Length: 372
Ligand SMILES: *Cc1c(COP(=O)(O)O)cnc(C)c1O
Image (cartoon, rainbow, N blue to C red; front, side):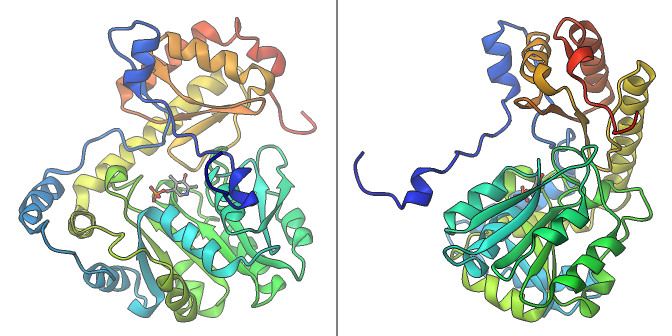
């Protein structure tokens, strides 16, 4: 090995992105394949957004505004927050990494339920911190276990709500109670990458309550609901002290000018955007109904994907789906995450699943809720 990486970096698992449709089609010699592996919005960006990006592209010789001031102010207006409580980053994962860099010193602990978002262990270890994982119950968060895992070494609690990959969500009131109980030295991060897909009224908007719960941090993104995954822009909502701190770790000009312009245009997306969200939520319910109608138990999802708790059959099931041109995201030994696509894509997944689930042994390994 050339060079001497820090031990915590040498041991790092590499982040594994979902496989592309092209890679799956090539491997299995298929005419085409579809990608339901990365929870992307299946619809291309709005024409108005594409136009705004085109108009801004003749300014690419200049650095854009490092702080994305116009976008912070606009988000502040939209959310009725002081712009001092808004940060903008290179995707919400950029902001999560900034949080780890700023709050996790060597040996400090980061608590999160597991299975959850695969970037959390990476950022924790990169910062030299120690991860503390708490188990799920019926594929959902057990906030009591999370609270019990917090010690005086804990700096961050990371709660993806809804959770990736299981899709489950916890009531906002329970998270705020947890935040109050752990005290001001522990930041409780609500990673709301899928906020816009939530329909459960118990998973209410935490933003109006941020002032009363100063150790709560909310991260959101333009990648999923707004369909801008390829541009990398997300935002963080928190106490001004937290915003000022994470801003110190923002790589200069990490939020590129086209991303800033596109995010502003997407906020003007109006009904065109909300109609797509409605369709994706409707399709989610259709996919869930089809699978549960065939007797498969699914954890309740509030996101733009479903979680198939296939246990030991997860990899076999994934390969079976890929052979039929459906790229999904396996979590070995745990389950398979399938994003909601267009109606035609969802039909293709459902047909393929029906063909492969039994032969993959999913009926034997599938997990069910406790007591059922
Ligand atoms: C997709 C996702 C993100 C976000 O991504 P960005 O594209 O970096 O904004 C963050 N958290 C979770 C849990 C996600 O699934």
